[in-house]
Image (cartoon, rainbow, N blue to C red; front, top):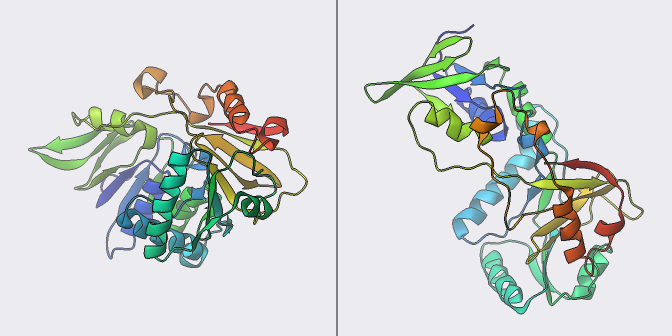
Length: 314
């Protein structure tokens, strides 16, 4: 096994793999990408893959616009495939207070050069017939939004980083620190010396840091989503839908709909207590959370209550 590198990146999800890829662009700069599981196999491929350009600050809008450009040029830059669709989205308010938020978001979006409009509930329904106008008090169309296949991002960056040494199925036991300086990382297969260590271990980030006496204020939480069986009328370019107060989202996916909810009281996990062999695919799920969310938005997205489930994941 390699014993020395200029940079050691722990975690091969989208952030870790991208970090390794861009570090490898430096001249005469060696990089190691380590993961306790297979490359890009844990939380990144289970994401919803939705890009929302309207944010609460100019800085965040600028960062998201940069991310959109990276998505557009991903294949050209890396030589790896990335499926993405410039679908736009619909932000839906069912409460007067959320309608006020939309007004603020609209002003900020226009000032930042985004393609945004305030539209009627009926116009929103025409853009995406699965969205019904019942109970909708305000709707905003965001033309810049898009979605992509998140499973392709981490793997794509890792494959494109041809000079990077990949170490899958390798546990990191500690980041080595001597006299206040990082000196490398200890793995289950040996020590790798290096002055730079990037902790991009996702749900395991805090666990990796704490093994070296470093505190990281990060707690893994469960997010769940459903992909339905194919539905008549679903097109890849249908705009995504977000119901603001319910925190429910939906987008096209393989002829059906991918949808989920940002839980008000999500389940938290202590990765240490789950054991060294824990894999995200084994995370305990609760479909009742999504059934309750579907009932909450049945007047706006009735299809979520009736569509057959193809995949349920978290």
